[in-house]
Structures are given as structure tokens and as C-alpha cells.
Image 1 (cartoon, rainbow, N blue to C red):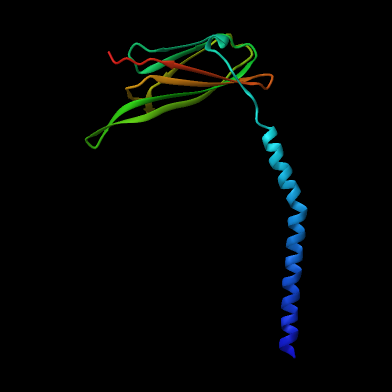
Image 2: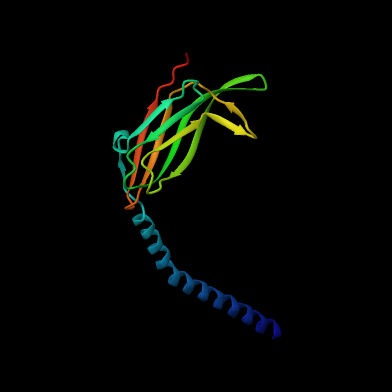
Length: 164
């Protein structure tokens, strides 16, 4: 008789857990679906911007160890996020290979800025010592332009690389 009572108690507890979990699922499910639909609404349209629209000029420094970037039309721009992608030849442990390299950074634009000039090194620096990449491809530049009104723009450009 005690065996039957214990089993009824266990079955009762299991049944209560199933009911509670089922109710929780029904109650919280609509909120999860609503959250997913809001996530889709948060995506922004990114407009294509030409380099001329923001006064962007890019040039490879004479020694080919850096890219010189200048932006002269900053009105209405909050920040610039840029990415440079290129291929470099690397020799490690006696093997030479072409590997993808890149640089990522953000520039915050202050209201008083009339232009921004930035030198972007093609390599790495640590403790005052720099090791420059041996670039072997064109340098692709992608820039995200964050405007003060909340809009987002995208600029793409390429710097031809010639090994002379």
C-alpha cells in the first residue's frame, strides 16, 4: 500500500511539472516571436556613398608601408569605421606564403573637425618597433559612414598596388 501511495505522489509531482512547463511555454512563446520580429525591424538600410560625397582620398605612401587617408566633407558625419584588406607575403619557418591581412578602426568625428587625415600602417608595431607587411595585392577599403541623423552609408574604394 505504501508503494502505491509513493508512486501516486511521484506521478502527481511529474504531472504538476509538465503542466507548469507547458503553461510557461505558452505564456513566453509569443514574447519570443515578438522579439524576433522587432529584430528584423532594427536593421537599417545602408546607402551607397561615393568617395567624392565625403571627400575621401586614399593614397599609398611613397615607401609603401602605409595608406594615407583624408576625409574633407565631414558635415553631418558622426563617425567613420573603416576596413582595409590586402594580401601580404609572409615567410615563417622557411616557408613563404601569401596570407590575407587587414586593418580595422573607427574615427569619431568632432563637430569642430573640418577634415580628418589618418596614416594607416600596413603591418604591426609593438614597443616602438614596426614590422611592415610585404603587400602583394591591391588594397580594398570599405568604410561605414555613421551620420548624426542615424543614417548609415557605405563607401568602397581600391588602391592599386604596384611593386616597383
